[in-house]
Amino acid sequence: MVGSLGRKRVIVTAAGPRMQPVLDECALPSFRRYAARWGFDVHAERLPADGTAADSAAQQAKWAKIALLREALRSYDLALWLDADVLVLRDDEDVAAHLHPQAFQALVLEQVPSEHRLNPNTGVWLLRAGPAATAFLDAVATAGPQPGPWADQGAVLLALGWDRGDERYHWARPGRGSSFLAGTSWLPPGWNQPYVAGRIPAESYNSDPASYTDRPTVPRPHALHFMGLTPQARLRHMRAVAAELGTSAS
Image (cartoon, rainbow, N blue to C red):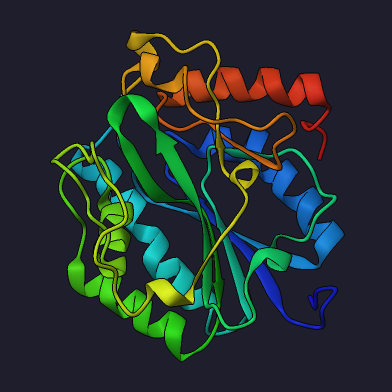
């Protein structure tokens, strides 16, 4: 499929058995609607396993996006990664409009005041095929899966030269930077807005539910990210939001 700018485009996502119902029922219909509007193919990979929080299976599932994006960029000019726990709520804007002509990627900055944290979040990640994107993915692969909650995202921060803060990424902030930072564009925050409502400790991991209360939000986000929740909680909350906004129909 060729997009509105004459370029071949693809949305890439993946889920293992625990997250597959979330992806199939809630996320994928919203991805396909957006893809139809802006000329993207959709590639959804079924992973053999996933896990919970930051266990080994979960880390391997998170890391799979690096190889899947590399593969996509062999055939497409633009690859948009969307995590399986993302709902695309609006299709009135081409995300590629925010990719600077000289940049090879675009990400959203996630701000968590209670953790004194500011960092790129790879749940929504736009890449333009070319030597720069290949070199960046090579640098991420060389770093390898990182310990703690962010196997892939931690490696991306390392490749960008970000100050990653402590072992939980508290106090993460822009650091000395690498050569890749100049080739990075920043998507508006509504392109990867955290879902903040109805969080309880029993259904949460990585960050305390209270850490979501003061995160910046916009009134009408393009993409809502149900991060840091158990698969069962994600499914319930995503079903409710999709039903309210009419995004559950394929």
